[in-house]
Length: 168
Picture 1 (spheres, rainbow, N blue to C red):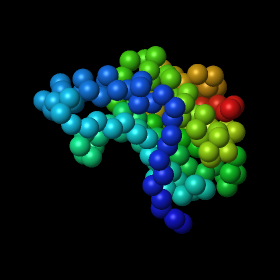
Picture 2 (tube, rainbow, N blue to C red):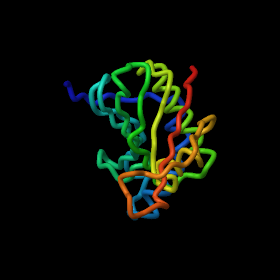
Picture 3 (cartoon, rainbow, N blue to C red):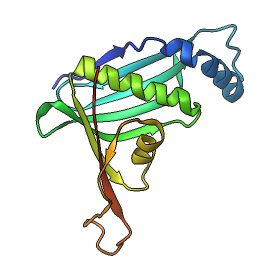
Picture 4 (cartoon, helix red, strand yellow):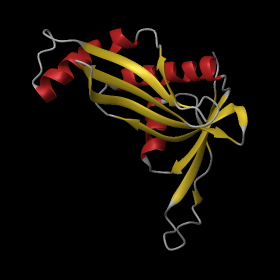
C-alpha cells in the first residue's frame, strides 16, 4: 500500500476561508497576518483504493495552526465505487453556510477524483460524525436507530446508518 500525500484542489477554497484564516490567526495566536503568509489547502493522505484521510488546514508560515475539517474514508466491501466514512471532524469555527459549501465541494471531489458514487457510514445516533452529517450534509438518507449489541448493558446506545448517492 502506498502512502501518498496529494493536494486537493477545491475551487474557491482560498477565497471562502481567507477572512476566517486571517481572523483565526490574529485572535488565537496573536499573529500578524499582514506580515506573513497564510495558506489554506486540502490534502489527502493514504492509498486511493484503501484508507484515506482528507484534511482542510490553515497554515501560517508553513506551520499548521488550524484544522478546519478532517474525514477518514475507507473502502467499502472492496467495491471501488463506494467509500465509507469512518469519522468526520469539523472544527466548529466556520459558519454553517461555509461548512455546508465545504461538505458539498469535498463530496464533488470524492466523486470526480476517487470515482465513488456512494458514501456510506454509521455512528452512534448522537455521535459527532452523524451530527456533522445532519448539520452540514445534504441529501443524506438515514436508517432507523437500532441498538448496538456491543453495549448489552446500555440499551440506549443506538447506532444509525447513513448514506448518500454522489453526483458530479
